[in-house]
Amino acid sequence: MARPIYSETPIMKPADADLGVTIDFAKGAPNPRRVFGGLVTILEGLEALDRVVVAALDPRIVPLMVLEDVEAGSITAWVRTRLRQSDDEVLKSGDWKKAVGSILVKGKHRTLEYLDAKHAENEGQRLKQLRDDLQVLTESSPIRHLPQPAQIELRDLVKPLDQIQASQSALSPSDRLLLTTDAGVYEANVAETKRPSEFVTEAEGCTLSGVLPMNLLVRRPDYLGEAKWEFKHGRDTVTAAILDEV
Image 1 (cartoon, rainbow, N blue to C red):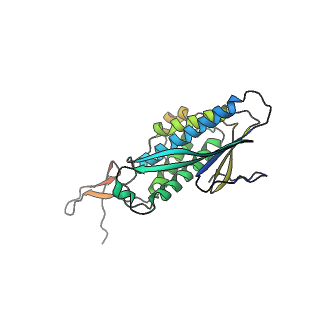
Image 2: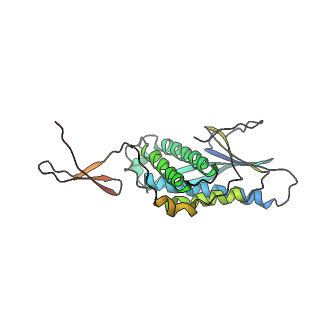
Image 3: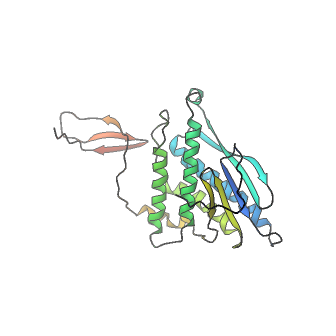
């Protein structure tokens, strides 16, 4: 998880806000446009990240980041992600928005953890691991009416990642970028300026192994022969041999 740090003056999060983005800058420093430009760019990047994660959960859900408040001093924008779905009957069932919102917040923390890590020789593998971790988050959703999550594509994911990094590279080394959620206050590493899109080709060539529980829908069983069964996982078809040891 992302490392929480706490400033000397606690940042008070409004009850209706999901996220606070703070740029702490020295008063009187030159090029003030970097502060406002960096704030706008990171908000756009975080909203784009929400769209990528939510599209994997259910393409019918539309995330919309709305501004709750702006504080002066060091500048803080408090925002909330609103979720809409086209199926009105689904909207009436349970507190699905809260569960999806929690996934989006966890996804932001995991993404910042990846972006803050210094460039390494296995950067492609680390990028793929981020994608896989976000995929696991979508598959952890307890919302039963949502379809099986679709695959998060690396080439879609790196676009908001590049945008978030661009916002940080626009800031001065003396600036501080803080993100506040219910999990605490996270200070981003504004000195790290790697571009994740440069490692997509390397990541696509990586092979990671591990054990991941999956819920598959049986599409084509074979009870008599020895043919492989067909299953559905989101939009993908999976074939597997079935062994009856009884």
